[in-house]
Amino acid sequence: VRETTRQEDVLRGIWRENPVLIQLLGLCPALAVTNNVENSLAMGLATLFVLCGSSLLVSLGRRFIPGEVRISVYILIIATFVTVADLSLEALVPDIHKALGAFIALIVVNCMILGRQEAFASKRPVGRALLDAVGTGVGFSVALVMLGAVRELLGNGSLLGFPLFGPSYEPWIVMILPPGGFLTLGVLLFGLAWWQERRSQRVEAPEPKGALGPEVIATAGISLPNRSNTMGEAQ
Amino acid sequence: MIELLWIFLSAMVINNFTLALFLGLCPFMGVSARVETALRMGAANIFVLVLTSLIVSFLNAFVLSNAPYLRIISFIVVIASLVQVVETVIKKASPTLFRELGIYLPLITTNCAILGLAIFQTNRDYGLLEGLAFAVGAGCGLTLALVLMASIREETELADLPSIARGMGLVLIIAGSLSLAFMGFAGLLSST
Image (cartoon, rainbow over all chains, first blue to last red; front, side, top):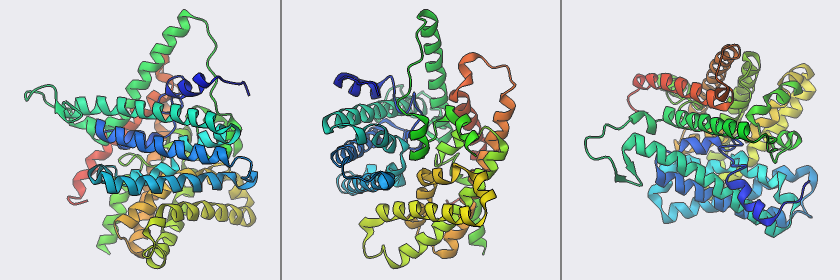
């Protein structure tokens, strides 16, 4: 494993290896709750909290957790923090808790969190693990807020609840309905692919390698879409 | 009986787990390149969903009414061990089937559709029979979405696409169109 600097640990998750936009992990919450900015932000922060908490504990206990049952232990740790987040949100902001519904509990099965534990936190000291968790969590929140902003702006003509376009604006209702989630992210990915293509044409640079090896993906039960070939071979 | 039918239909097409509720997107994106594998994945999902529903009914009736704060933790433990048990049993009973399912079986643990089913079933206070109808409906819906997606993706393989549309962006746009089509079913039921 190539050693990374502290700065890289934080920045990597925010842009170059953004969990949603580049690695396509944690898509379920990224599409389900992003019909406005407020919900996206709440979901992003809740995930950030769970990710930091579990990375801290996993990194602290990395010498005590037996290798054979590590995945179950990680899931239990994550589930504990999700319960804390669930109950706190219910007590502090009941409206948002109601809007997010079952998706707070579903943070447990967000592949992104388990992926960071397996690939990073379980092998690094506490400080590094926390930096990585913050970076990844912020990257996730940024992606969610981006999606939420586009969908709220087009689907409701407002941002954070403030109307921007005046009463004559005819909202695209479809953007705040489920199809809007798929379409927004699809168009965003097209834009990213276009940008990357133009950049690679200008500089002949090698593709940045992902942080997760295929072996990790198989054990943690994460499916990276562009690796479907490896999964096909396994059957 | 009519009510059970509605729960089944509603879970299968109106509130399709993948296309309307965004549950189980990982296999939807990862395992939808071939129709055959999509069908197998769907079958494995139906199986685990039904078992989960049974156990969740039991847990809700006897255990969790006393300790609701243990809900998330106990559900995930039950699902993880259930998948493990199913894997072991299938491996012993039918090695052929085990080989065919391959990696998809363990992958089911982190499929949000399973935990989603457990949570929805609890939130809606479904009993044993209602839960079963819900699970079968949700499983059939997942399979339907997977197979539809896989058939379209097989077609796009030979299509002449611009280079930026060769990645996951295209899959998401197709999913968006499918989801748009499935919204037409919303008129079937007025109160969901």
